[in-house]
Image (cartoon, rainbow over all chains, first blue to last red; front, side, top):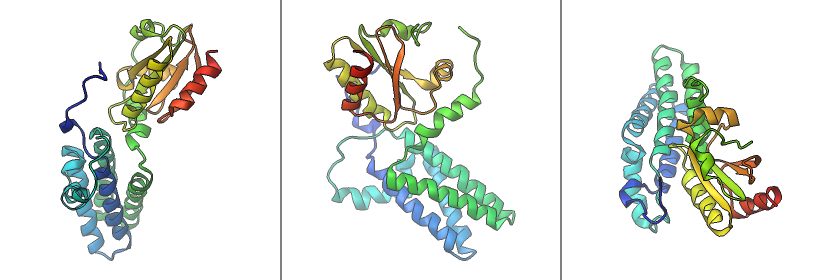
Length: 155
Length: 103
């Protein structure tokens, strides 16, 4: 049970602007994937997939984008009004990994067009996150849980 | 019939109305929603705020048709659903829903 009287320790939260900046940089890299010639496009796709993997496994605050935000951007900003739970952006990183990882695999198999479509879908998700702050975990996590767990007998 | 009947949450319903919030771990606006609803429950007499972790109550989530978090249900004194909203609500919207449904 949560009690309003005891605020969480500062370590539990991350600056909410970090994931937004990371999503902006992600959008930029994915856009380059779509327009760059091969093999540069494939290399950038590999880089972004590695970044998503770090974000999904260790949390978005450990990705190179978030490190850049902390070193270069955050010192110039006022302290955040409130901190954010790092789990929702981590879920979004895992979804991004699924898309770019899939894109990378089909690219290596030679299906360039399919790979670009998957990278494009990842770009759309990252843009929605960067521009509108869309919370993918809110929209999808419960649906995934509903779909993957079997109903238990009535109690 | 209360939508929460058969669950431990049914005992925590408010005298006049209940704000039921479904939350999940990967939901960024759930914390802010908790704050808004808890504030309303503190200010308005007879109104209780009940937060339910959707992931651990999937039967209830299915029977109520909840698909995203945060989802807020407004229950009347008898525990019947009078309105629902998804996303981060504003305090004014919650107040209006209470006035409209639980007069």
